[in-house]
Image (cartoon, rainbow, N blue to C red; front, side, top):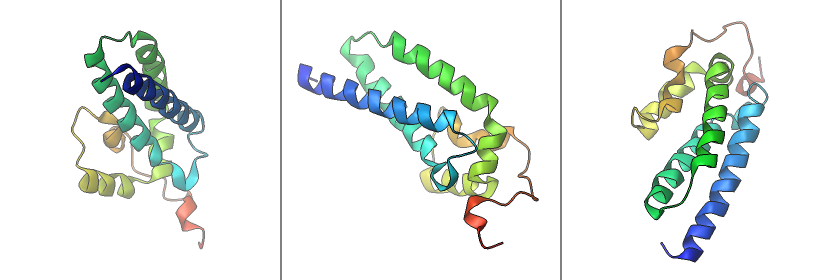
Length: 125
């Protein structure tokens, strides 16, 4: 990567981390967009992996990401309920994420969905 590409990648990384942060902070209120959180986390993973080869200090990004990931783990049950257990399974089939991308498998560390709670996509009930 040349300097321009590195700068653009870092700017994009900032944008994606901001979106990921917003979504993590709003878990339970993201509605139909909730599943996008996993895509943002994928983008962050890919960008950090790519930038790691460029001899750039990514320590501050990684520290921030650890805090956000820990918050996501703490809110895993709320997040899985928001996305829906069945939807998680479908996303796993469609996207076939590797096991290192743990955020796609949060439904496996939570209990079944709350049957009494209406989901955003069940507005007709």
